[in-house]
Length: 374
Ligand SMILES: Cc1ncc(COP(=O)(O)O)c(C=O)c1O
Image (cartoon, rainbow, N blue to C red):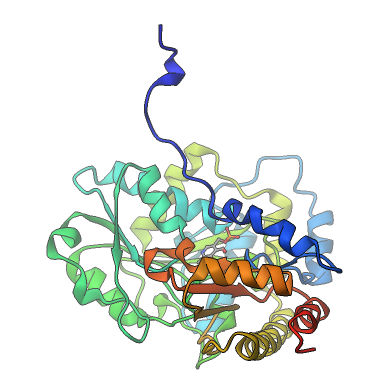
């Protein structure tokens, strides 16, 4: 008799970064070992005040509020006001356990509310969790192609897909491309088609072309901005982010998320307050990333002959390497550096690679020396 576990059903695909494991021994062979430029995981220290807050909040014993403490949400409100000049009522702000869980679970909550819709629209070359969240909810994931300048080609969305859409995701600055989107256009498209727009803005503090922007500058109705402290404040290990915007959408998400037990730990919320209230460390981090982007772009350009432009935002180099997997293997073998083949971010990225500048300067210099460019 067949066991109930033999039933055909959803089989999670290999996690993209696990597919890089076979290259690790190539790099580990070299003196000094592997220099990991694949996952965008911060390595620089968060500010001391954040670490102090983590250890001294006294918030360990009781359950933390799922929607976020008033202190945390007030710090978010202050930051959005200071950074973008937009006032968002505290009631229209919610905490999330890092933004990956928010992105990965959102479609199922939206679908429960709108069972007549089944589609998630997302950038064709993008962070894989937009598509995966749709798949995990049993929804259709429909990619929106880029225009030649890398922003979303909203005119390419088929009317039938717009009618069925639960949400449109935008991501500016984009991971992996670094491109900036016209968030005003995205908000207007969502309003005119009756589709909520979710704007993932976790790299906004690292905007190199002009000022960082939020979709909230274009009004709160029908839009939700999603932010993370992982990148801004080097707190990926603490798991804290937030979403803010449309009163009705935020309220619904706050309520449904309570029932799932999605809670940011109390000490993490206290650390989030300390991090959001400080901008000095963000300025220092910005300088680090820009320096590393410039250095690595120069080194890889000279070594490979590829055209490598600096991104408009974010901390990734994204360039056409001819064949993303072949380049990744060659760089691991010769330079001992691991990068991400572009097809991790969609089939349109297959010729590209993504290089995350998340290693200290001396590790980047080690790669340069191995490539004969020290
Ligand atoms: C575009 C984008 N969104 C969301 C996330 C998730 O970040 P976290 O879960 O640490 O907040 C990442 C992480 O790399 C990302 O690149």
